[in-house]
Amino acid sequence: MKKEVLIDSGPLIALFNSGDKYHNKVLKFLKKFSGKLITTWPVITEVIYMLSFSVDVQNDFLEWIERGSLDIMDLKIADIRYIRTRMKKYSDIPMDLADASLMCISETKSILNIISIDSDFEIYRTLNGKYLKNVLNG
Image (cartoon, rainbow, N blue to C red):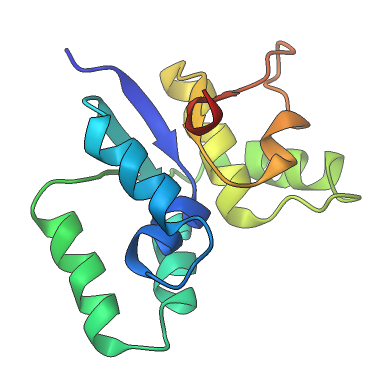
């Protein structure tokens, strides 16, 4: 089984926006990466919104997903309590829906590795006090 790693919206946006300052870093990392990328629908929504400068780029992103590049985890109604609680706990940062959904999947699937360009994941902790390791930064 391939190593499962969560991926946040920032690296996905950078991957499909050649003008993004993280584009080359993310592209280089993903060319070497051999694991399974996992994300959530709130992350996908955020990426599509941020790529709205080009319908063609949005389409390229969706086609990339369709080819099997990402696994998208569904959230359940029961996950809403976790998400609400985490967003309230980290309201000073603040934690958005996409980040909270990734932390929820981290907990339910016991995945402690993430690919992100945000420092927020250095602050967020799982319910048992563990930090996610950002594998993009080595």
